[in-house]
Amino acid sequence: MVCNLLQGKKGVIFGALNEKSIAWKVAEKAFDQGAEFILSNAPAAIRFGDTEKLAEACKTFVITADATDVADLEKVFSGAMERYGKIDFVLHSIGMSPNVRKGIPYDEINYDFYQKTLDISALSFHKMLQVARKLDAINDWGSVIALSYVAAQRTLYGYNDMADAKALIESIARSFGYIYGRDKKIRINTISQSPTYTTAGSGVKGFDSLVDFTERMSPLGNATAEECADYCITLFSDLTRKVTMQNLYHDGGFSSMGMSARAMHQYDKSFRPCD
Ligand SMILES: NC(=O)c1ccc[n+]([C@@H]2O[C@H](COP(=O)([O-])OP(=O)(O)OC[C@H]3O[C@@H](n4cnc5c(N)ncnc54)[C@H](O)[C@@H]3O)[C@@H](O)[C@H]2O)c1
Image (tube, rainbow, N blue to C red; front, side, top):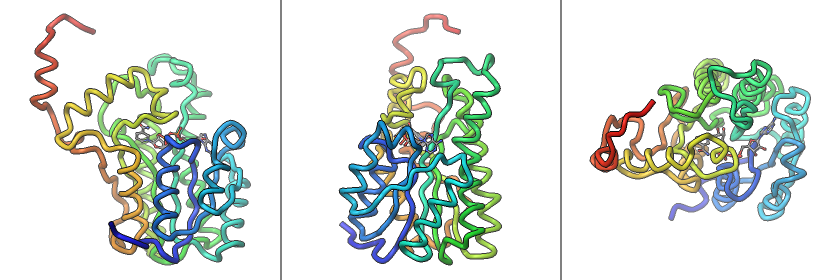
């Protein structure tokens, strides 16, 4: 077990709602590895979730922010700077689609909801980066990560407008990664994670089938939230200083597969016609 990989590093972690959240696992592991950080989440999440409990365990505090609101984000980054001076890492672990929540299919989506999906799940990442850069909040060689999903590249039934949000967030990581890298040596990456049982994940239509399918298809099996957190720690550490502008698959090999023996075995059981 590697120790103190993040000793002396300071950061901000967005999106820890409850103990299933990917951000929750990242916070626990970052704390174990010696990092100090502020937690942030949306007002409703602070009311109904367990973020305060996590803050207590990690000896820190929460700054409430709607990630679509630039003034709120300014509050978070200024708060972090007041406490730590400049910071070293940021985790964007935020996603929400009202169309997914309401079960509206992609070919009938509500456009107001669609804009909300994109604002919450993707533009908020740009807003975060813009605010951090304006405040000069991140140290040189700092590291910023957002979470993504393979639906940015491939169509997966039921993922709806979140697929578009993920395509956008990966593009933002590349576009801002160039600017922030050139000016400040700050690296920006997205991690494309396996389907994971969290509050956001479980809201996707047919999620159980999706989890089973990707498990069968992946030579290493689906990656858990904890394993994702381990990967985040390496990317926040100094061991990955030249990794930037990448979408990094953390999916047990799923994204490189076409068909596996385990999936074919299951498929062979039925050749009933389907849609
Ligand atoms: N669970 C999966 O299967 C999976 C797979 C790949 C990628 N991801 C991504 O991982 C990230 C984290 O999701 P999770 O699976 O841990 O689920 P989660 O539900 O635990 O986390 C989502 C978080 O987004 C926050 N959020 C929503 N609207 C917000 C707003 N306006 N302002 C600030 N915060 C807001 C929620 O409060 C919550 O904490 C998301 O980007 C998600 O798309 C999840």
